[in-house]
Length: 59
Image (cartoon, rainbow, N blue to C red; front, side):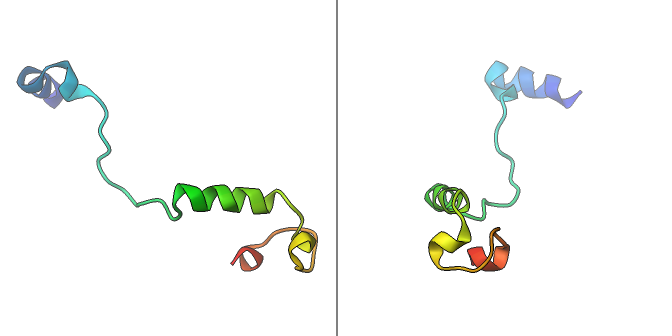
């Protein structure tokens, strides 16, 4: 029950969620928006063969 000690030391704000780590996002938000916009189209729109996207085509 370590949360009780945390609460006693810091009050209710001490129990709020805080990012504790983990991997950083692979892409910046602007890059993510661009990728989403591209995969909403057909590869042939970008002079690429085929009718579906692959990681190789996105690269």
